[in-house]
Length: 362
Length: 213
Image 1 (cartoon, rainbow over the protein chains, first blue to last red):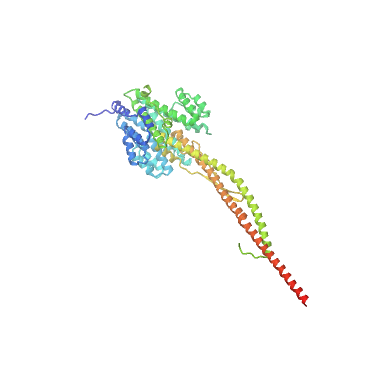
Image 2: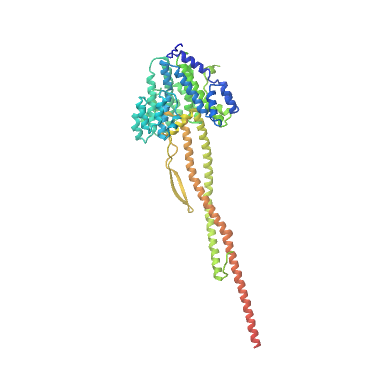
């Protein structure tokens, strides 16, 4: 049997291109939106890669199938397939891209412990992706207290233990406010990711671009959400995640402006300013959510756009992952819309749709 | 009708009872009017709050459905664990027209700021925050509703009780007393007539006797 070299992008990208071919086209998506009932919807799903998971969900609970879980399972299996098809540098970069799920899992366990959830409940919310094994995650979920969770992380030499243990006394001092630990974890995670992406390489640069975009998104979202709060300068600066295009001083300056319109006009990066201007138009209608929405769409757009940069680079993977996430979000919106009896027009209005470059060209 | 002694003292007693009942009736009517004056604005307020609650709930449910769709249920469930907490309310008491009424007030604002929800703002989208705020607003309205509805229920019960008393006095007690007075009065009248007739007869017999003698 011929050995496949997983350390370059040839093999994995061929597989990803195959998977990309299964992404739903806009036309097909619109047929799903227009489906008259769930039977018609299921028939349409039978023609997609979601067939198995949707059918299982229907079989498990014909009255109220768990579509959310079905779609999540499909997403996880796709991402896992990509990770398993890589080796060497591509594997390192895909692992970095999926490391967000480690953070999500750690936060879920911490929140579960803080909120008094039983281990089985916590395990049901964990994502089987990321670099922390399910065994360790289950052990953490079964820990007696939050402090034990952090100790398990440390015992297993998982780097995220460090910021959590360092900030644990502060967490206790602040009446066990989990936000202290979560903020420390977010900052450490994103700094660590950016530190891992310092190599001068076009693939590393693309992954870096995605994470810088995410940091910017989080920082802008924080700015518009905390602008009205009475906070000291040091408290504001603490909420700024370093590594993005905004410096801490610029972050503080924007928060101090207070007015959303002023923040948008004064935003230093012209590319983001354009996105924020679009968000501003929606601001009156859906409040600060408009900024998250437009920035997320922009991030997906950037990710999807990377598909065509280099056929033998990480861009193909990033593009697929972004498009797949976008598709899952839209399918969830669609299914929920159908469940609550929205009309196709109402569903279309709420869709998060970001067109793929090929479709736009068409 | 209960058995009444047809005596003059009983008649006086019953007449006094009627006077007292009328005074009571007057007072109860005044109390009823005062309660109604308190009650009607509370109905308006309750209706207003109930409409607000209905709208806020629909709004929050829609936001939750959309947020769940965009973020995924796992993320939302995870965030919800961080926000678990207690809502403190102060319960004191007051009196309206002598009716004891509990006063329910928020001990702390249920609508929290973005930094008070137990999770880090940097790791959770504005969408989740907005949904959380909408549900906190529901709690806020629910506390106001609990206060105003308890007030409404207590006043309503008192109003009903007062109404029953007014009706009882007006339709049963006072007419019955009046009946009794009438009965005693008739009985006494009858007795006076009989006495008068008897006296006349005696007088006639005495006169006859004296004529014969």
